Length: 86
Image (cartoon, rainbow, N blue to C red; front, side, top):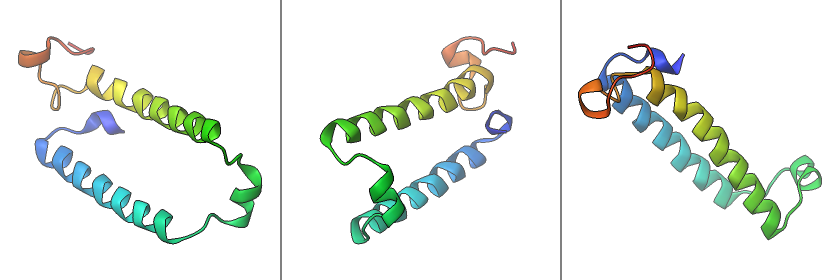
């Protein structure tokens, strides 16, 4: 899946794609109210926002760890040492 990226064009293109989606998602969330089911399902407090943010950061970390462990295109062995498969 994500570890099969084998050239820098895919890495840069993926960053542009994800960045564009995140910018449009941010604009969407600024301009709209949450749906009714989301207002009922989630707790709307500072502690809840912190909890949701920490959960999303940890999810992103679990996705990034295999990428840096197995992929030697984004993290070449010459700079960072041997990757998992080497």
